[in-house]
Amino acid sequence: MRILIVEDEPKVTRTLVKGLEADHFAVDVAENGEDGLQLSTEIDYDLVILDWNLPKLDGLTVLRKLRKSGSVARILFLSARKEISDRINALQAGADDFLVKPFSFDELNARVGALLRRPTELLDKISVDDLVLDRMRHSVSRAGKLIGLTQREYAVLEYLMRNAGRTVTRTMVVEHVWNLGFDGLTNIVDVYINYLRAKIDQGSDNPLIHTVRGVGYSINSSERDGQTSPGVRSFQSGKTGFERQTTP
Ligand code: CA
Image (cartoon, rainbow, N blue to C red; front, side):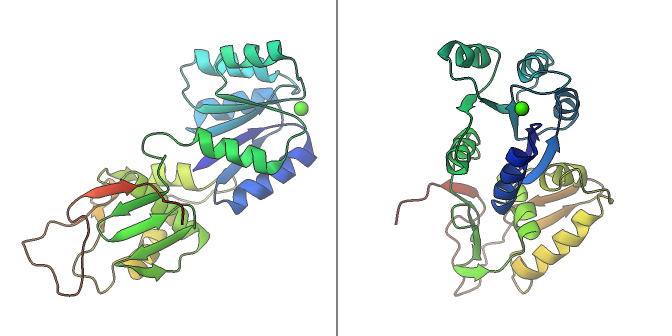
């Protein structure tokens, strides 16, 4: 998932980038309102964290222009202003949430989590056949066996699994998993798909990651002809499913 931070205070930005990257988000930063508006118009961010006081264009104007352009990105508005009327202004202009500065990263993180909790994303566990991705623990297992993934492999897999059953293009994967620091080719996706196949599908008679020629990739359970290998139990054969994490 990809987040844009529009903030001109380097100290706040550094804290946010560090914390959000540690939580596996791809993060971009814009240091003024104009750049923020341009980036958030061009790129399909999952979330925009937008400060009110910004050089060139203030956050409230960015917000209004963004909504006017039809953007449905989720927006967390930041401001040192504490007045209720200011919050109402921001929410009426289209912000999804409002956080007063100074704030603790933990609170911001909780709000980011709440904002990203939408129908396909509200679930702490995503499963495709016997492959389970646990977003709370950042862990992945297949048929109950834990699979060690790098941060990037995890992010690519999470994107595929959130779109299970749909074909995603290389460009879509790159746009949601890498940040602006990435200036390579979308072939990088093929490299990561190979890593994931080696870890998830190799040796399995039921490969889950499929190449859609000329388009991209999809993750879903293969068609089976009634044969399941003994010892391999599939709890949702042929389907993708979601379940909520129950508190241990
Ligand atoms: Ca500011």
